[in-house]
Image (tube, rainbow, N blue to C red):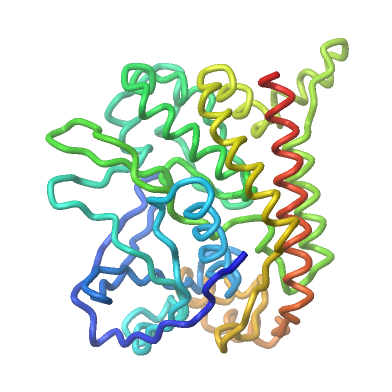
Length: 353
């Protein structure tokens, strides 16, 4: 299985313009993505953030890895991310790195991009408390009520598309597939379709790679959430299931409402498993990976969020910076990815058969 880890070199001064985006939930933020023209196509540079929790160079690797897999096996329309370095970008935006990724723009001339959170705000329902949603990382989000929402039932295609992308988020054990991630096209006030899947930073396999012991602990924790089972004869187990079993509940709702989506997903998942076992894959470092620490965002938070330079300097002295062995990392990500594929396949088959 081949991935392209070549690094695209950009200069912020050569941009066509800037794409501004805002997070609209309880936790608000502004984002700025420069747009470039490469091979007659508009591409967006997505920088790594100095303030985003747990961000490391492997957030960018996760984007390349999962976008390639999703494009090749699950959705040929999904744009493939590439590693990129944009010189002079961090001079303009000090809270960002000049390391990041580029990806084809999703913009369409006659459509507006709108996220799931904004759609649900427009189509309020009593049992969906979307106004109080907060974007937390290291969290799996419950989509069961959303899949039962009127707009998803009235426009069944939208429900099917969302269900498919939720399954993809489970495949990569995405610990930040929040309600502003799913994007849709809106034309003349009507939702036309869902966009291709994007945004793969918080895949569990690519987190905490400066400490493989922690990575494996976090991976096992995520896997336990996927495997949590309900004992109908044990009240405590039932309550625990209802409280913590976000992933199984999402799966069960998707199987119940969209069994044909699950069947199609399983066919493609089996091909991915076959290719992973037969060919494996190889991560490469072509001069992109800098030394890092998964806690470096604390420095950024002190410096740029609360404006405490003394604290930022103290944290810089405290936090060691690590250089990882790409071959060891490759083995860890391969084992965790293949294992997750097999377990998810088994969990889905158990429910559809």
